[in-house]
Image 1 (cartoon, rainbow, N blue to C red):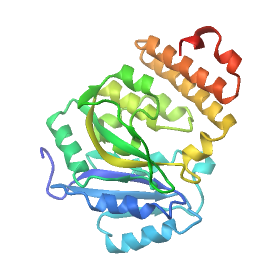
Image 2 (image 1 turned 90 degrees about the vertical axis):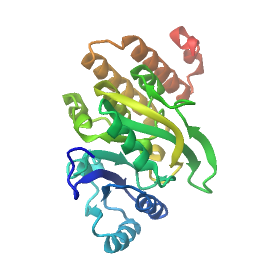
Image 3 (image 1 turned 60 degrees about the horizontal axis):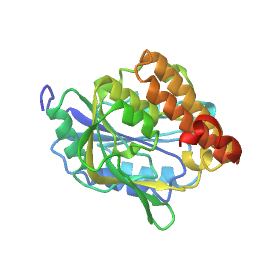
Image 4 (image 1 turned 30 degrees about the vertical axis):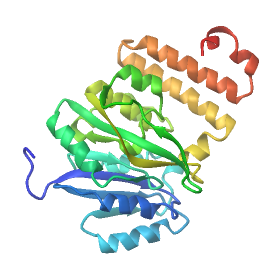
Length: 293
């Protein structure tokens, strides 16, 4: 690889975890099974888990201390309003960042190599993503595939905005450090309770995001204490979340000088419809512009 020395880290795997004792081993094993011709590091941030998650991570750290580099928080940072995702980012050394939460895992040992190979050959590409399975945490039964397209292709900004936060699986994202760090002020200044949707939008704005139509990871749904369980299974919290999403889209609209206003307004209307349905306001949902959905 160009401009890299023999001992340089090519990929930093960024893994955030909290009370994932039943899942964290799957995640770490899937990182360790990667077959690459380059070096990578595994950065794990444990946000003061109250179960055996930290204990399990320590066992792996003892065996693979050269590549597994954990942080063990004594107090939960998320509850203090800290943007936890940035903690691993700020200590990463890789040319590329690969994302995977502690309750998810990768399913293909060649995942990293395939994505890095593509990014190396296409310097104008900011990120490479792929298909993923969404499975139930209890029993691992497949619910559906997270599959943005039925073929390999470049994803457009319109598709990404309209697709929402679940359009691309977070654990499929590998992105270029130098492009991913080009973030407007609003990414940090606005305390949204999510970040993956913002990230993929920004990566699409600063470069090309390429999709590989191959399932190479697994996303678990209905994990106890996960962000989704805490925020989207409760009607009030889910409604507040979609209001936050719409606020974020307003800021993106300003940042892009309204270049994508049509698709942003359409997406906001769909989110507003989702809020009404969750609140049981079916009559209001059938009125006005919502009738189009």
